[in-house]
Amino acid sequence: MNTPLRMTKQRAAVAEALDASDEFRSAQQLHELLRDRGDAVGLATVYRTLQALADGGDVDVLRTDDGEALYRRCARTEHHHHLVCRSCGRAVEIDGPTVEAWAAEVGASQGFSDIDHTIELWGTCADCRAL
Amino acid sequence: MNTPLRMTKQRAAVAEALDASDEFRSAQQLHELLRDRGDAVGLATVYRTLQALADGGDVDVLRTDDGEALYRRCARTEHHHHLVCRSCGRAVEIDGPTVEAWAAEVGASQGFSDIDHTIELWGTCADCRAL
DNA sequence: ACGAGTCATGAGAACGATTCTCACCGTAGT
DNA sequence: ACTACGGTGAGAATCGTTCTCATGACTCGT
Ligand SMILES: [Mn+2]
Ligand SMILES: [Mn+2]
Ligand SMILES: [Zn+2]
Ligand SMILES: [Zn+2]
Image (cartoon, rainbow over all chains, first blue to last red; front, side):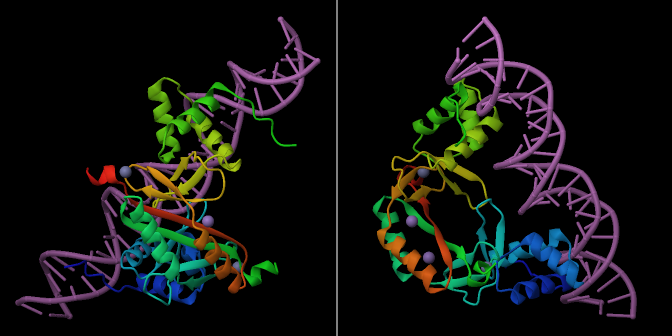
């Protein structure tokens, strides 16, 4: 029996903010965004909600070069990776059938078990390139 | 004209500690390691040195799931990736000719520029599996 | 509708990694 | 050895994230 997980105004607001964005966003960005929009939600709650969503596999998390966590609700719920814009966070979901196989194979061939992989592509999207 | 970069006792100690380890290590681990060994070096200096080495491409940096930075001096200086043990940090350097091509291609096909990629494999090494 | 029990919230404290400050030290040329 | 300038380190400051705990909101049986 897992935790009940009640649907509250706050959790709905965070979820909505995530759905409304195509970009990867940090917890703090979402917090500000909600505050500005009028649906103020405590920062702690934003973090807790994101944590829960991430645990449930409903949002993807990735880390910036400087360690900040970014969240995004992807269309696809199955395993996939991303091509993310370094400046605005916009992302494209991508599959890598080849890469998946490669990762598993390489891991096994080195005597490691429980292989997992981190694969993210970074770049500058068309809009951001035009400043 | 780049910064001079003097060779000091401390920098040598950090470099040596890195060379002596086959595993990815955090700045704090290296700091303790040096302290225990007798070559105490200020934590700030450890960070500064690692930063410099990383900037110079002499050490590789990667981030733990919880955002902590890990450093390692790899044998190879050319571009490559790693298969890292989640529990002890031991790492194997790996090439991904296929992956390299795939990453560049996918990025370009989506209209993104300055494509870069983060590819790391995680697993449990043979030694750690045997507890 | 009422109350008890449980989960959720939020302000602020606490954390942990990393960076910054700044007075003092060491290195590297001359 | 003398100087000029980078380097060092203790401790303060940042910053993202988590924790604490008193208060608020649900759920369900009555
Ligand atoms: Mn994958
Ligand atoms: Mn590569
Ligand atoms: Zn962009
Ligand atoms: Zn191991």
